[in-house]
Image (cartoon, rainbow, N blue to C red; front, top):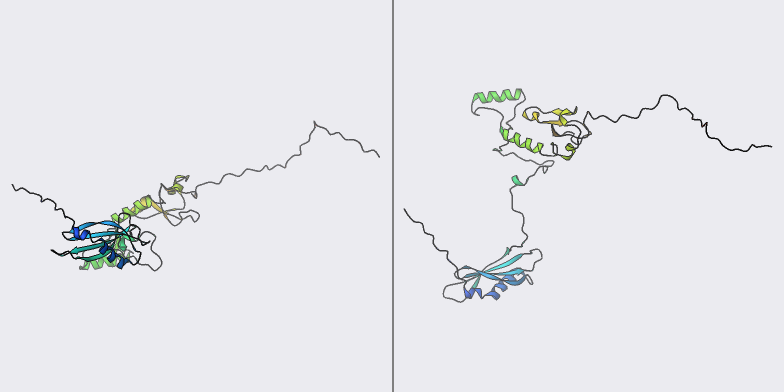
Length: 263
């Protein structure tokens, strides 16, 4: 049995000559940053046997937490230090831009506007082919013609995964049973006369509201959703007025003191 041994980690010793070239590094940083752009010295760290990077604070207002990094080096058996690179690098407290995302991950629901196009990927898991059979057979062509005749001439249709994602999104959204307006509703949408059920598997849980006074009008709602515009909500009964005319009330117990007017 062979034995695997680990090599000890090599410690790079800082070159004293390169570490002492602080003023040379500052001059190089000021040449790039401009007058007053370089702040206090922050230290240095080794990059190799005869290479060191010096760090300086930056005084630019738009780069809080950043620092100037100046790499210096020297050739073997010489004391002459040269500048390798000057760059501005972010520190631990630097303000950085958000992580870059491709456009397919940046697009969110509601971002699409008039004239915008959002192509679906060929391998989108939410879609499956709308016909069966290989594309290079006569049976496939015949099946396409049949699909078009019955109104099913779509290249791709919703997959089971796409249907489940939509159902989960609708059920847990603002038109599901957990929305505050649904919690306060007296009756669910499933018993409302304005509720129009969907066809297919989604129709077992969802429908569309057709009440123009409802906040969900034209929206997909769950059976268990609800609002205050339910068709079976009854208006409170108005107080009935008496059909008999009001009778005058005569006070037969009290009396008024009056002095006769004698002329």
